[in-house]
Image: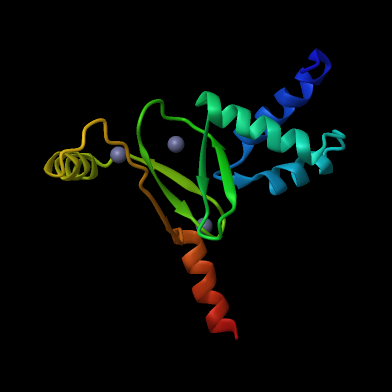
Length: 137
Ligand SMILES: [Zn+2]
Ligand SMILES: [Zn+2]
Ligand SMILES: [Zn+2]
């Protein structure tokens, strides 16, 4: 790819790092557009999937099937708790999941087993906001 696009990739990477949790390409694109960067949606998609392929970003599928990305803080294998309302993500170690996955794979004669376990829910702040909305209605 042409070198002149490097600054665009850097801007996408910066915007991803500034996001509070998992974000979609669409919402990152909207942020960059508000900053008048002139970066196209296709560049955002391409950059995000490139970062994910290199392991510089986490990617996952939302329950709605949308790809979400995040500049990951933790190196190596870990899990996430993700708020499906605001995208807040908490990185978690899950020793009992590791043990369970290893044991289950071994029981079935599997080796080199991998797994992806992410928990989706409502974070405390969103749950509270939702509860007070309900009271107001
Ligand atoms: Zn992560
Ligand atoms: Zn939330
Ligand atoms: Zn694990």
